[in-house]
Image 1 (cartoon, rainbow, N blue to C red):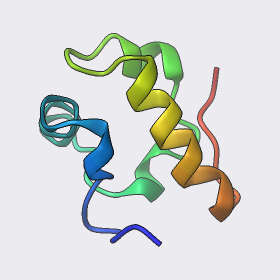
Image 2 (cartoon, rainbow, N blue to C red):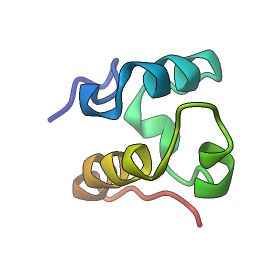
Image 3 (cartoon, helix red, strand yellow):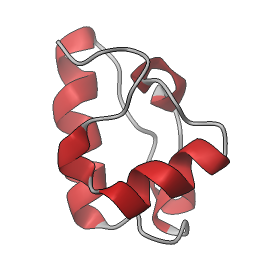
Image 4 (spheres, helix red, strand yellow):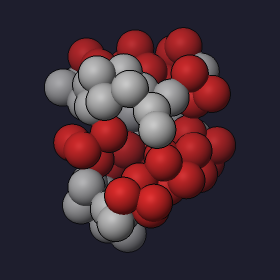
Length: 65
């Protein structure tokens, strides 16, 4: 299980930094977040979205389309 206080390191440093600047510091905060909105953030691309999905789904959480 990923530490709930940190985002997955596999996402990359820029994506984690930019998401944290927008208040996303724990996986639970992404439940229901829009993929479209996340992709509009600098450094967040398809790979980051895939990694988020992989970490959210086992916990029964998901991103909105």
